[in-house]
Amino acid sequence: MDEPETRRLPPEAAAAAYAAAPRELAVGDDIDDWAIVRRLAGGGFGSVYEVRHRASGQRAALKLLHAHLVTSAEMRARFEREIQVIRRLSHPNLAQWIASGADADGRPYLCMELLDGEELGRVIQHHGHLSPPLAVAILETLCDALATAHAAGIVHRDIKAANVFVCRAAPGATLGRIVLLDFGIAKLSDAFATELTATAQALGTPSCMAPEQIHGRRADARTDVYALGALLFQMLTGQPALHDPSPTMTQYLHLHARRPRASAVRSVPARLDDVIIRAMAIEPAERYVDARELFAAARAALRESGVVQTVLATESTAVLVTARDRGGGAALDDAVLSDLEAVLPDAERALVAAGYTLALDLGASALFVAPLGAAAATAAATAMWAGLQRTSRSARVQISVCVHLGPLVVSGHELQPSPLLRPATWRVPDDIEGLWVTGAIDPTAPTGRRIA
Image 1 (cartoon, helix red, strand yellow):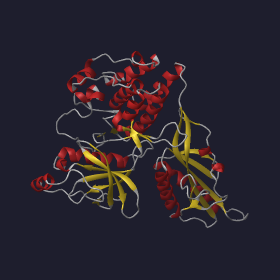
Image 2 (spheres, helix red, strand yellow; image 1 turned 30 degrees about the vertical axis):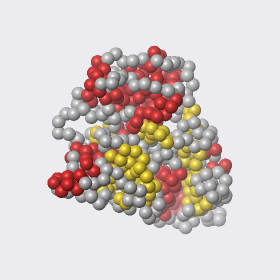
Image 3 (cartoon, rainbow, N blue to C red; image 1 turned 120 degrees about the vertical axis):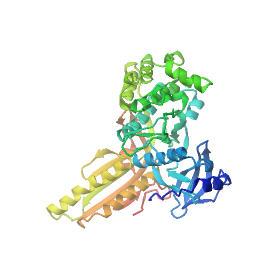
């Protein structure tokens, strides 16, 4: 969906219009083609609503800038920055962009996939603290997502428990999908990016801000490494690494205080203390170079301490793509063989762009997995299928695509045997053709059904 141009009212007219505008939208109100279903959350920056697309029925989360902030050039820049970042990034642990634009009065909005679960901060509050293997497993997903962002020249700059979302786990799953949210103050380090303010200003949350942020200096990947170290401390202990009721004093602690040891608060391997202290070093040059190096160090600390890495079962989806020859035993000529061999690479390019990873290469078939829900998986497979249909190929090429839902079992970076990786257990008819979803995706069709 193309992004509509945001209307910009003259300052005097905008100020008058928005002074009288309601802060919240009511159920049934429309923004472009989206109808408000309910309000999900809100803060000083904007409100988030569950919305439904009038034509397709698709559900999404719509973030709308508060009316009284629309005349602020800085607030609009932050909002537009978040839209720009989310549109540029594709990763299973980042929220997926659906649409963006402006309402009838010019207020910018952003539609993202609708997530079901709760913030990591609430999970920590509920449990008091997380076990070291579970905390490191969550750290891994965040590090992997940030590695993608950093490779694209994007620094998040506000990593904290409130900006990490834990999706509801499927039955039998240990942990739901982890999603990093809120790129509203992210920094783009490319030539097209502009700074959010004309003068140096500290942007971020005091409890997790790196010293260079507090000074208003340049942020890079090591700035996010600092916040990840602080978040790891909080996951392990249930409390912030450095905190004071006064935001000014909190910033002073981040600038000067001795880094805390999680093992002094909870039963945590001392090697993880070393990881956190290095990640939270005052000088960026003394920290881990990037998020992947941080995670590797945390995983090594668990292993060297004799702690067993958590085996996670997360709600995931698999897409099986198969290309067969329907020639009935007739000899394959070069043209038909070339068409057959092109199907799986074309499918892989489309699915990897949607956040999938190749899990199994079975010759004539390929299995892709991602920690995405049924709706997102079906949308990705449908888009991939449509792309395959636009390619001209021999009528002898028979293509089948099947989407399945279930727990994906992972130990560290290794996929473990599970029904999700065994298509023979999916209960779909043999030798299917077209685009199918299994009964796990659509419970009304126990043996699956064709959708295209």
